[in-house]
Image 1: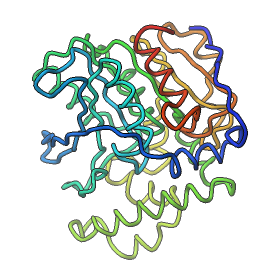
Image 2 (image 1 turned 60 degrees about the horizontal axis):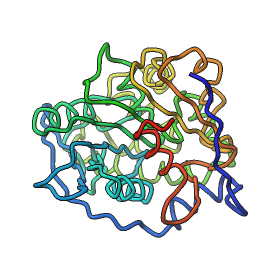
Image 3 (image 1 turned 135 degrees about the vertical axis):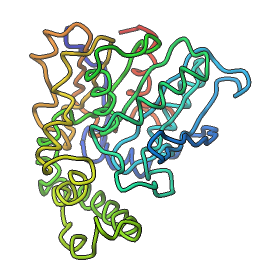
Length: 323
């Protein structure tokens, strides 16, 4: 597919990628969105919590559903999830915002958790929705880590359910090793420090329930995201080490297999992303993958107004087949 020229025009301080990223994550007023939480008991004995929002009501559902997937150590109450959900609900969609395992305010039950490439929970939720409800159109929107999960889900299967029509991945590190190498740079110290503090806290809580697999000595060794992925993520999810995890979980490996339309929006000044996350030459050869690279926007920071972000408008347009 051709590269899509972006119409996003950042103004003032929002031309700075770091300002866009931090403002949107920490300073944007939380959009108003009514959410109703339902727990999905998973086949492996664990659970995920889903925050639902309805165009009309739970009893009178729309025939269209969008599933939202948050990023690393986020949740379904983040402003980018609620802002997107609010716009979609207003325009006729029901919304199901997935909280990844351990991200809903309650630690998950098992030793394993979520990661950038694990698509099992998304697949199980989609199958349950199809079995239980009558949605004729189900679309996916993922942010950062959630975007990689979305793309990998679409690309690693021979077929996906026919109800899935269009999807959008925003600020997505499709090459995970490159993203790790970006995040450990000094310019990203604040972000990586925030992530690792959250992850260390989860490790410490989980350690109580899994003393044979986790211990205080290992916790002391976790000072970076690479350490965490070596000592927990890789071990818990069956990878040889962190680099094996990055290689096997990167969605760039399966983009060419995707058979439903998907839009990838990655800002040029996103400090989380490496050059492989802008696959211009690859996308030109693909039928179903569209790439839009705005000059500005930082990481999930496409500010226009606090009410509606550019990325939120673009999601609505793409899901409505307005490329």
